[in-house]
Image (cartoon, rainbow, N blue to C red; front, side):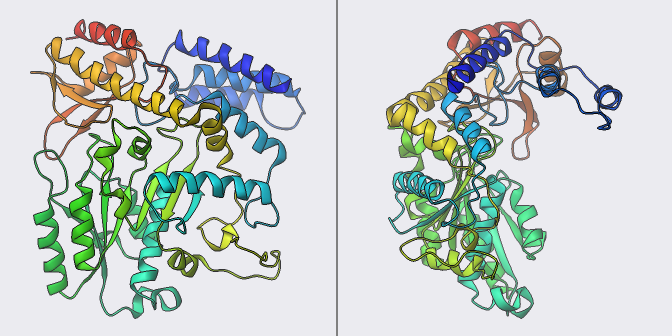
Length: 452
């Protein structure tokens, strides 16, 4: 009965959001004044009243990322099954640090991750865990790769290494690696920016040159990061070539497929991910193209022994190790106490099935094609090349900042501006909602024409 009520509430909210504004008009002072005048926490308030007030604030003072005309930054519309999953998790509040505390939850996550790891082509014994997001998964990859490449790193730190480790990626890769290098003690200068070709893919010749030069200078290259679906332009790096290079050079290949990794399910798209099966580790976010609520990252690694060495921990206050073929997640991941992140993906996969997910993913890819075609017919110039539904475009004399501001003001769509490589800023649109239709796109392009 509770889920029938939730289903009705979600359907009502979806309809209200789809017919309402996308972008709020509000200042920090307005929200702070509103909160200060109502909530000093000295007097108890009726829960129904407060919850309704908070929902009103979210309805009014938030970019509506589930709107079918939100063409934004990988914040998707979410499935009903995944909303029910988060509701169940909040009700039972399982703690996934150890297997013994939450056997059902841990096994549901293990089952879900093993299924997706198999789709990526990883071996059955690969390690996998849900994370708070792609940044944590990328941090995990760096820590595990360091542990495997430099056995003394775990006990003695970077100071005991004979050479400074270095990481290689392009300027289009996710900038979380700069923060990761800082947090891991490598230093931000350990991140080497490799050149790109005309399609913004990693240039293998420049990668080889930089690795050779760094080794000649006494540094210790240890990781290459390939991206499946860069944030700016949806670029997919040449994974087969990267895998061959990393094998030949003894380097760890990490594939950041935070958004584009979901394409592995699609018969139409999975060929563009060829080579991902050779990765040492993979990042993929369910809260992006798998269309579940924040936050649900995933970290996959083909070297479980290195994961165990990187995150090993023992303490008397945690339950003793469970006998049998299981591991306690607090000993194989960055997190200790952890929410049951994986249920929303498990329920969504179970409810829609693989075929249902293929339909959702391929629909959004088709809508990307519809947007490209509509833009070209209207005289816009599309400037990126990708099979994924990220479309970057411009036209002569366009000021992207002014144009995007006009889109917001007139509630036409949410898009952003982006600079690709060393080029001038352009407009970026990404289909992030499985509810976006061809009529939505055609309407947006027509309205855009009235602004220029």
